[in-house]
Image (cartoon, rainbow, N blue to C red):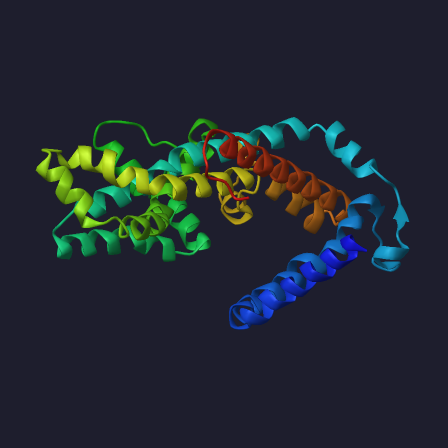
Length: 311
């Protein structure tokens, strides 16, 4: 009886809290509706990965085959190559691309000349607005062995033209560093916004103590960025296998396929070109499960070694 009374009291308190903050919950409502419609309701389609999907029979009418498509993927000759290429490219992108926006934000924050700072910000933000298709077109044009500006420059030093996009050893570097150039400025916005919250009094006190500009970055600015850095690192680790499909696919050619074939491009070819929907769904589901495991693991490690975590 006492337990029932306490439960009713808790429920009453819960609804009372919602009623008291009704306006705040109203702001959350559109996001919840959109998330439910576009992210939770389509989850019923996950079962395609466990069936032999037939458009004529529909999802529920297609034959159930269990883990057959997953086993087929694990046994395929492409499994190791695709998984390794995805991990290698993701890890390289994370190591190369994650620290640069932080350094850029620290540099811009310490730059006191406002006009030059705005010019630098505009120049570094601009590449973010170039579409992936245009970016890939620019890369192939600039790196062309016949008319590319890169080969014209190295030709001035007597170097023979290089087919950059055909060299497997160069493909990952081109993919990663062109991405860093395109996104570093835009990604620095979050860190720059966090740094704007640092009280000038901390810097004034550090100057009085004789701290150099570099020491103020390290001992004043960087500690304020640690929570933001941790959260973004966790989110990046949680999507480590989800490299964008467009850029890798557009930069692919038969000469670099051994290093450029990743899970997302493989899923596209299997699902859309070969029309093997169930097999491509199984690969996509495998990709999502690995991402979820990585996200939970990194979040757990972060919570253990620091006080910063997603939950």
